Image (cartoon, rainbow, N blue to C red; front, side, top):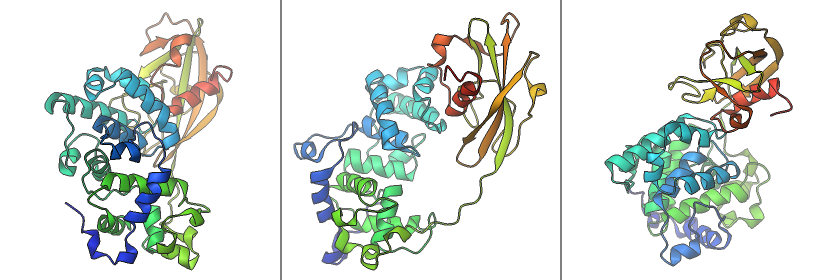
Length: 362
């Protein structure tokens, strides 16, 4: 649905013109982005690049994503190349970015676009939302940036900017709907993608969570929180609940040649489809067994420490045990050599457990 026209706003409350003028001068150079000057020359963003970057950027910083994005497009230059890749290879390339359901949905989406849609992404929000792993925000962002659809794009940076512009007292996340409507009233028909990216850049570089550089902001005179001097009071956030702590154990079985036993985690659930160490059955909702007696097979297990890893909804604490085994017995999984281990699709929590057992190697 198209947003309400900006003409319905008083002239002195429209932000698109000053914001886009600022963006034309100060846009961040990002590997997936077409610069404002190139856009004026008729260069269009690659929908594959926009989609890939938006999936990677969910719950992740621009700094962390850049190298992963470059590696993906170098290895798989088009969505059809990604669709042709083995799922395990995609998971390995994703390892370290976290939120691994994104990687599984990334592959499913590539398969669908390449197979069912002839390699072309839908150009509407509704069409994009029908794809695996694409929700309302991602659909709006791709539609606006890749296809110039006047969609209301609202990420965390944009929430902060609009909360301050309008001194929105409703706490997040309850304020999301209110903010979305406001963004829709301001989104211009002619440059909606640049408008969205300008707001993202403004929030990332000027309208920061702490000590915003208001004197450099193109919207300084339009910002209600700036006028009242209460910038850092916004956005208002609901009180956070303490995250539950789950416990479990991880077992590092090492062969005499330095190879380590790995297993593939079940496709469904947290860290689904990733490589990992044998662990007890901890979940988001409950603890796993602890102690050497919970090991998947008998060995001279020795404790090497306890590691902690914070997921979105809980903190996990794993006791780590290490043993040197012959490797001749039938163990579940496969042996990853010293040289191969770093290239496995290991999530960060598993790398922490390996570092506990091998502080000199990780």
